[in-house]
Image 1 (cartoon, rainbow, N blue to C red):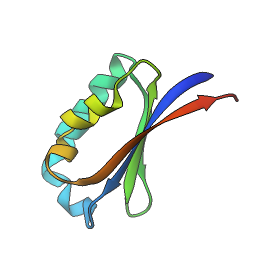
Image 2 (cartoon, rainbow, N blue to C red):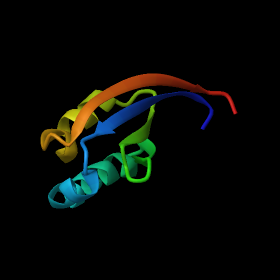
Image 3 (cartoon, rainbow, N blue to C red):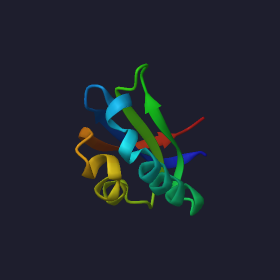
Length: 90
């Protein structure tokens, strides 16, 4: 996994556990599709209860396109997202 990658950070709305229920399966299917074709290396919620999420993308992937099509973003469950370059050395 060495080399450049991209990180996508999400911040979630309050009460995400309850509010995500109608959109969860579509969100997971969307993320799985990107994982299956190799654009996403890993991803998941952060915090307990979840306050956001973090996704690790290949350097040539488009995290903004992922976010724009994500059912959580479209439903207004993500209050902000940002992309950062991550240079993995270990």
